Image (cartoon, rainbow, N blue to C red; front, side, top):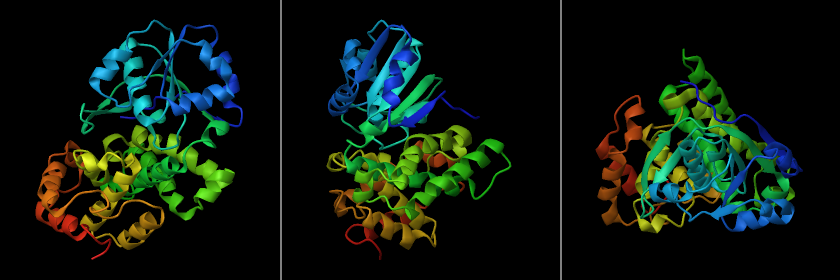
Length: 338
């Protein structure tokens, strides 16, 4: 099934200036974080005229329930991926459209018809797919320029993962038109490794960086929207979900943990790309050992068990070999390539 949630995507130097015209007199409620909201308010002071509620920081069932208590015709989400995922669920439950103003280019939450839900302790619970109308994703370059580089870096890794996971799930082509389109978009995502996305390039907002931001926020989300289970998540995200059960990993960004999961996935596949991918991830600042993630040798059996029960693995073309997975984790305890 093909699912796309976004009606319009606007990445420009003055995207926020068109917000009032989009709202067009409707009753508005804003959901926002802290730092990102301050940035948006400095650029577009009129945002402070709308009633607003602050997000707690985690997309949990209890947080969604708390935030549903508003009276408005349209919801505006200002923040990062967890806030946007929460806002999508709130908009769905309240049957109102959503406008998304990303303040970080760290993931594809702004473009996907699903939300990743966490438990109260910060560990991964599930993802829900549902029908939500996102009227516009407003990507204002004035906001993006002020966002922390490390979030963009993690977003690029998460987007590159679309290529490797989609290829693992469906190969290079499919007779299904949606999956084939998802694979084509995923291939574009994989090419981000060829660009200069250094911190210097980010600060100058180069053409490569602008191109990458569009892939992080939009194209990466469209991969799963077209390909559904045939292109959405594989071992990379399953390892991420398992890692989230360890408190030591909570300080790492989503893309960082997905990147480590990609190393595991490509070793499982005996991929010829594995050494190149691992070297790129290391240069790009991603954690490449379990030691870096704060996970010791005694934790490996728990980590293996946590990966093996992930429902995402049901979509793999062949079952995982649990013993081989354990060996890979043991090899990744201290050094990147053994």
